Length: 237
Ligand code: GLP
Image 1 (cartoon, rainbow, N blue to C red):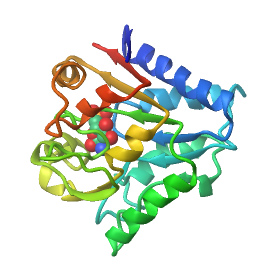
Image 2 (cartoon, protein in one colour; image 1 turned 180 degrees about the vertical axis):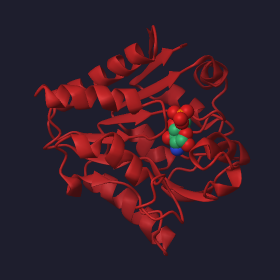
Image 3 (cartoon, protein in one colour; image 1 turned 45 degrees about the vertical axis):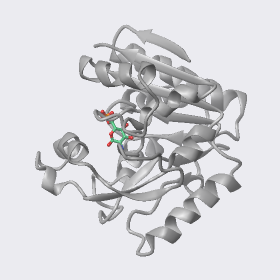
Image 4 (tube, rainbow, N blue to C red; image 1 turned 30 degrees about the vertical axis):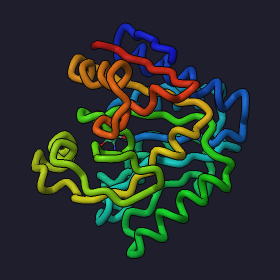
């Protein structure tokens, strides 16, 4: 594991964007695994800036996002599709047909999950997976559990996660969707490279447990310790 300490959020975002842009410059047809949450927004902004300067293009890249809420129309401003459009896709040259998220509105969610895993396999797997970390150690929406969930699956969001994400839903955890679809640990762990970004004192304890504590499904991010090419960029501020 490579741990990079950044001096502040801007520096963390720039360092993360550097890794992502290097990936796409070195391999134009890269498959990028992308994440939502507040943490990666600065990295997306930096990539947009570099794209507008002509330094990086996503025209030949594909993206697969980690997760999507269930029962939230994709047009809803808090859907992860809306998030990705607003914070990234609308501002770069990615071809829309190459930007993928699981469909949280799928009636037959099991078929949707299977199709999502098949899609990632068909793309040849993920070259670089960007991750944030939830306050309870979740990655994507892989919540603490008795065992690691390997495949894309539907998950009931934990109270802690609904509490943490309530800020996007009028500060009421009950407004946060109860379920989500999330990529499982298999495609995440099979990614050739993983880039985990985290910032703020409030993430320090969970990050420390994830990177230095026992590997346990009670803290899904702890499995990342077993990944051969993990870069963590952390900023305390
Ligand atoms: C969300 C997402 C995760 C993200 C995490 C942390 O619920 N599903 O992919 O990493 O929570 O979010 P933040 O970066 O806002 O702390």
